[in-house]
Length: 272
Image 1 (cartoon, rainbow, N blue to C red):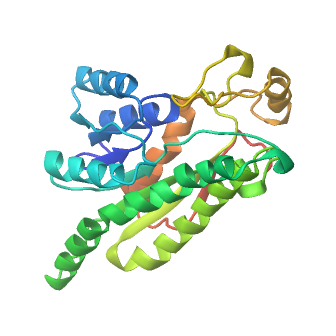
Image 2 (image 1 turned 90 degrees about the vertical axis):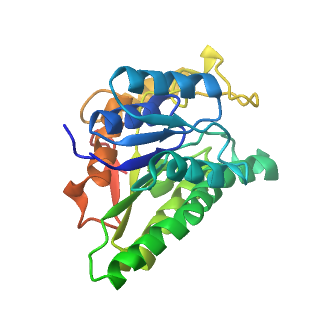
């Protein structure tokens, strides 16, 4: 397939899980990919798998919450491939807690990674996205349809007990998505979001496995909660990273050139 032939895509958090599946699917569809991840080893692993499949890729490591990383990621795309056609704001993690026990740092951390970081990446890309579109319009040409895909969650659409910080960030990204769609539509830029339900990842593994972020925050959910979740999924299975990647490809491809400001629920049919 070549739905993204000749396109350059930035995918944050693409060293593992959903981001990795998106980056690889994009490359399989002809995109030149900028892989970004907090951790160098998984980022390089994703890149090597893309290269092994004949794809073009460059790695830009660093936390998207670092104020200078968004500029570096955008510049890596421009320096390596000369353009930016797709941005997927995927990087993130969870740091759960009940309201009355949550610290300011815990709350702010989720806004930083799920809301402020995507804003900074979009802002860093704005000069290229806007000015190239303006040049096309001035020359009487229709600008190519460029895409921004933000990752939200059912927690951001409907809230979730124990996740007031995560839900706030993921609802915020929905508002950002709809605002970008309205503000940049005149530049032929489409901005949409995907809201994931239960997708297998480090965030949804059984908590007793003991996986943590590089800063020591425990990842995963209680086993009982995992087992209860599947009873509410009509498809009777958890989603895979590959299931999650497909709708992102649709929103990044020409198949969705008249879709903007939308939130696509990827939940296996569970009610939000």
